[in-house]
Length: 346
View 1 (cartoon, helix red, strand yellow):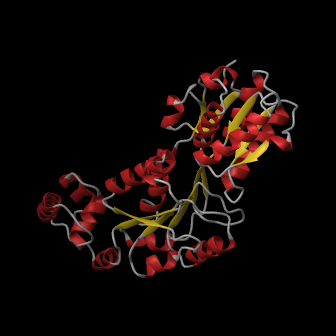
View 2: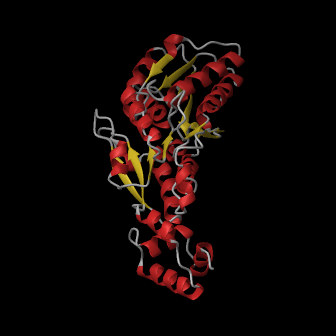
């Protein structure tokens, strides 16, 4: 008897697409449907009744939960656009559609309801915070066996599937780059500690300083909210102490560029800037004045990995995958890379 894999190869599509066509799940292009049906008929392939029953219980949607950020164009932000591109690429290859959902301000997302109403087959969660309500909602998802992945946030002591970057090592490399050049008075502009990656960046900064036999001056530890505006606001505090500060490390490029703009608005020339290192290596980093040294984060690859973990390992059409929905709870860290540009070179 022919297999679904053989049908997919003959039709030139994925196995997931074959399952969706034969089980009437989700929208399918007519040309794709015709190829699959012809290949199936030619090979005499008939899916089992159990597989058909399992497939029809699916929506064909991969859910992506986005954070609520007031007055922000999320899809134009490098962080989100790259991750969504990676997620979307893997979903497209697998014949699934993306269902993008936004959090309601000051409310905990009801994730389980999305599964109960069969809106989604799996869920990727962006912008989660270390919050009791959020943690409780995710624990309920996990207990009920729904496939989900948390991106760029770590919940210590939990067994959720998580995809993230090695922010400790990325920040350590940034600080060592500065201290190796002789910079000593380093200001660190971090994000809110409700995000695990803010805590990890701080730990990396402390490690880098310790390796250089230095300590982070508590008065030079500043907090923003990852927005350019918070960088502009921090520029005032940095400008007031410019005679004491010889380098600035910001937890993302937006804040770093905000500080640069804020210093220029105060009449400080680029020649008198402290050294700058950002984080993310967004498109804006290369176009900054001066070009911004930054820690590159593989957001696209993170998105692909998160989608692959869910689609290939947890939302396969074969019924044998039903027993695997809540197992394999691991954290996947991708490496970062320091990209050196003019902003941090003596």
